[in-house]
Image (cartoon, rainbow, N blue to C red; front, side):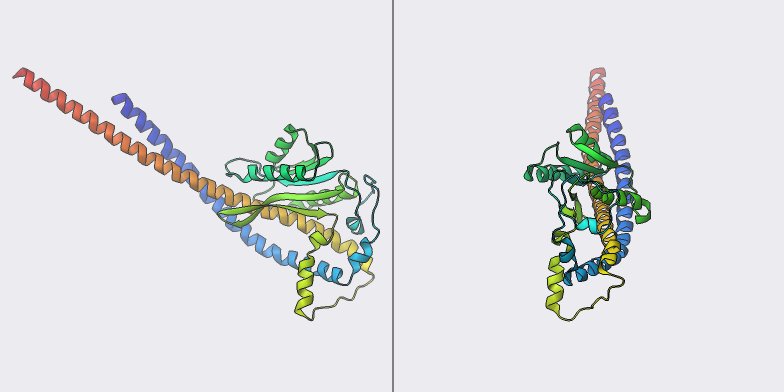
Length: 314
């Protein structure tokens, strides 16, 4: 019985240490979540403004005029991607998928949900490992798709917990430039969208080429219905404006997706660690009850033995 008591005590001690670790990790994830939410709020101001500019350009039919007849053979490469290149539609021979996962575990179902839904997206489009180009942001996704035989044309690990645009500017530009270089003919970004601390939802958003799907035509119709709106005087030309604004818009979409995915990751980590901490507390409570019962049984046995010995002496 003594050995059993010692074993239970060791398990209680070990579980308490685990509880302390998961509790600390929960607090860290919660703090990171709070920080990135503040950063996202400030970034959203910029994202909304550039989206507004693009919407106004669409309203004046500039984009429709530029994209009309803009179809080039698949795989045709350009030396340098320009703003107008992002409007060019071409036959999809290489389907690009940017998958955003985490570099680590302990984030609940965050990674498995993104990977599962991404595979369904690829299968739904009748794409295979041969015609699918994977851009992996995060080690978990990169390792998974490599093992499944997919062509990972670019991977990035070690994204900061609170990503700043200046720190990943080159990454975002690289992803955009790969469209002009012909690595893929269409790009979807797959990630978990942050809804609230307890909930996230999978999103697969079309990013390139820029079209009505990602220009927010619903916002345009709403703006037209609301009445008067600002007009833009364009100098020196509409083409010059598009050359500058479209790359910024594409970069903002990709950076926004990374920011959103990181927010969801921290929320998932916080929730997972809270669940682990609560489970540890339940195990400790159960072990403590088991320990008390075992100790009471040991005491009862000792009293019985002493009483029996006294009776034998009499």
